[in-house]
Amino acid sequence: MKEIEIGVDIQRIKDFCNVKKNFLNKIFTYSEINYCLKRSKPEQHFAARFAGKEATIKALSQFKEKRLYKDIEILINKAGPFVRV
Image 1 (cartoon, rainbow, N blue to C red):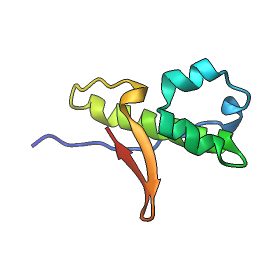
Image 2: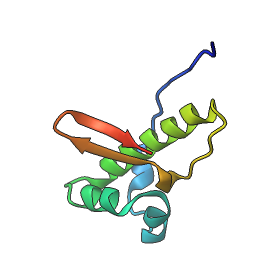
Image 3: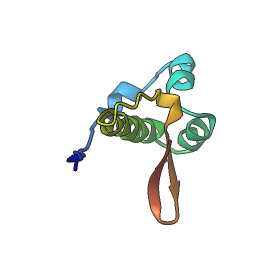
C-alpha cells in the first residue's frame, strides 16, 4: 500500500496586494474572484485560496496527476472551506 503524504502551504498576504486582473483570471475561478473581491481585505482571501491550490497540487502530484490552478477551486460553506477539483 502506498503511503500518502499531506502538508500545508503558506503564502504572504502582501503578495496579493495590487495584483493585475490578468493574474487573477489566470489563477482563480470566477466565483473565487467574486468571493474575494466582496471582502474588506481581498488579498487575505486570495492568499488563502492560492495556498490551498498549491497544497492540492502538491498532494495530487503523488499520484502523477497534473492540475492547473483553475482546475482547483477553494470554496466555503457553512461547514468551512473545501476543495473542488
